Image (cartoon, rainbow, N blue to C red; front, side):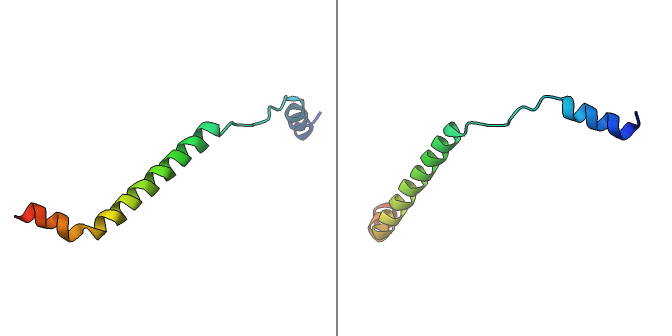
Length: 60
């Protein structure tokens, strides 16, 4: 046998395992991060409406 056929034979005889990861925890974490980011953004928008009155409390 020549080298090329030996390489092909070795490659074809190895057992293949299918890569099938489970991303359920990652999806859950990303959903939680998105939810927290949305909540914090909403809080910042709400606080921006009261910015002048809040600053007046601290400046006195």
